[in-house]
Length: 575
Figure 1 (cartoon, rainbow, N blue to C red):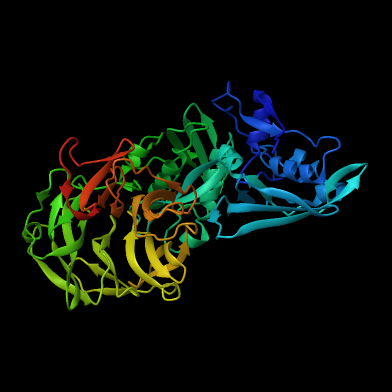
Figure 2 (tube, rainbow, N blue to C red):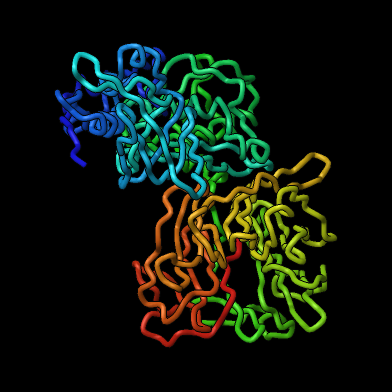
């Protein structure tokens, strides 16, 4: 495929173009940003060229798809590939279909061109990505001759964009909301077009609220607020001027944390500090300066882990720690319980490891044991089978799947409680469940009619104490034979799954929404991995060949470099 482009490098033109762009460029009024983009000397975009004279119908369709990769509001060049009436009515702001580069545009009848492609996923007008199910993307375009030139008369609304172009033009950022405890910000991935208007667009997305699948599991302190003007950026300080909120100190703390953690991700322009104004007056919570930074709201960090969160694993039923294989204190470290899997939660106030759960198997079935870290464990739940327990950082409780069909949570010191999972029964048998560090999502491996697949659901907690795991959705339709999963942080996963090209299990990384699926190197592993452990800021661990390995610098190595590998299985990190 020949692509026809011209570089747009003039700063003035770029500022006019980008200041009016949002998730999908729209016809809404331009957003005025008083500070020019910081990277003024760099090329800010590559813009397509108009149709070539005498182009075939297939070339017109191909170049129309190329022309979607534009930062110019309303896509005027793309409209030149359309017949006049279609150019006036085409809605370019209704979303984006992201396709693979190896697509075909074939004439199937005079004036009819059919496009066939691999659909990666779709982006809605709020910047929310939905991964595509397996299958082929097909669109039919009808064209007619206008003044001797082929032009499209029935373009589908929205943009069709090649994946490399989408990655080049759009940034993945997180809109942060609050977990039910009000203690942590929770990521909700969005894809926003690059440019100076990005801070304003991101705040607008925060005010509009979380994605549909996440909404029931989080709080939005900014709901009901309004921006009085566009977010301005001077140097590396963004100023957000809001109205429509009560002057409640606790609410303003949450709003400040939400804004600071969201905006500090941005790099074009780079933002390090945020000034929050309410009706023109600075919001300055106790002990927080006017220019707020993430350090001022470290307690809301999405991926904080306990200081004592070193890797743990099992050897011969005994619980040990990395890197030296030291036994944990108490009978669990001596192998008294014969554990096959385990999890450890830290006290939410002190951060000290406090709650230990583990599964013991015998001919009669599985038993979940629970108790203090370093102390005696007592039976808490029995079943034919129990999944490995999992914990989150915001509540001292463990979750398991009983007999592949029932999700149960066990609070520290309390009795087991059922978790309603309304969509689980129709999907198949679940034998792996891992809570996200913030406790708002759960990744579940389910064996159904088409193999072992990876699902992510939202944890919804009611005021009456009821807990529901809802909206389980397959976020990696192309992965089969999934055997384990872990959370690298609250927005990213590491998965062990079958490699479609070869008969082996390999690790993959991907975002919580399914975007960016990519293999992880296996260099250094002596055999296929069987279990994985990950946690924020910690090196991934796997068990392979009956030994524990860690990923360091792109290569899997022994826990102590140069030393012999330590035998073990079922690695995990406390949260």
